[in-house]
Length: 208
Image 1 (spheres, rainbow, N blue to C red):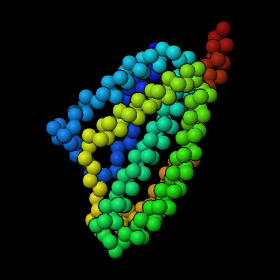
Image 2 (image 1 turned 180 degrees about the vertical axis):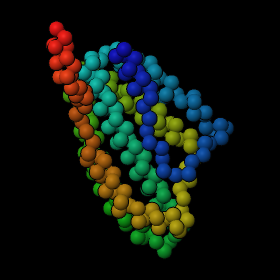
Image 3 (image 1 turned 120 degrees about the horizontal axis):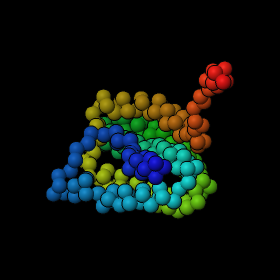
Image 4 (image 1 turned 90 degrees about the horizontal axis):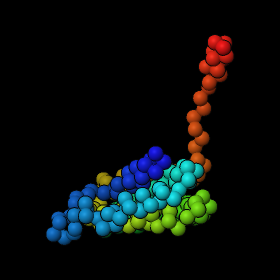
């Protein structure tokens, strides 16, 4: 049951979608997403990884996997915003300086927060697993598979004036939101829910 549960967690691992207009590229340009050469190796790696883990390591892996996903999703968002800002600056020269300067501040703040949590992730992987290299290799494979799949999608940043003004205004809010999400990442394994059995125990004692 432990191995099965972990394999399900590994195989259902996903990352947040990119913030842009997306369309699948024609198969003539790129291989089909289903034929992801990196994704094909994941089930076997998941099985081997699960077979080596203790129950405690399985619980720790859930935390590591979730935080890895958060860090990676943040990276995707940063890339999409960078591309959107570039498109806005090119198409709306009157606001190019303003939106570029604001993005520089936005990126600096989120880069620092992401780097901090990435260092924590690397440290926690080494500390929590008997075979940290295998865990890192698995997460790296997930990263490669996600990058490959992402490359099969044509992303077109929206760059009309109204959308760019909305993007500029939203950077204040999203910077704080993403910083809070990263700073608030939990590294402790959640405790099982408390079940009050005092009533049942009392009733059982009375019956005796």
